[in-house]
Amino acid sequence: IHYFLDTLPQIKKCYNDTVVMEFLQRPGETVFMPSGYWHAVLNLENSVAVTQNFASRTNFDKVWRSTRTGRRNMAKRLLSKLEDRYPALH
View 1 (tube, rainbow, N blue to C red):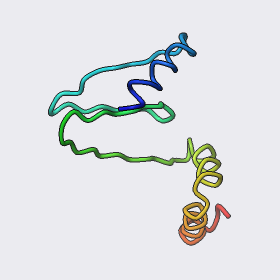
View 2: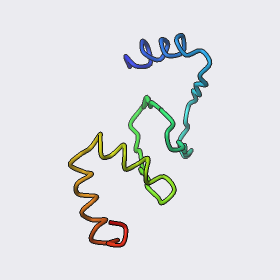
View 3: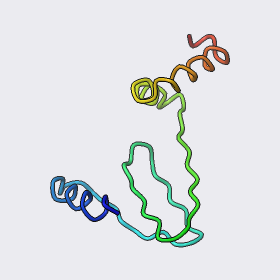
View 4: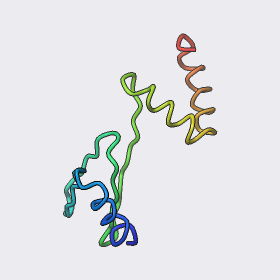
């Protein structure tokens, strides 16, 4: 709750040209967050979330740079799997 009460108002104040979308998601509704969108969620009651981080040929360079610097162990495992599955890429 700290984020919504303290941090978000400061972001809005400091970056007043930034579009902030706030809404209430009702039961049965789906929300799609495009790649790169910052977002935060406050669950008002018990909820289930299904998320998927997606890497494709079109965004792989960006995903790889982020993964390589932010999640080094996962990057090593991913590189190993890619070398096994797609040796022509290496």
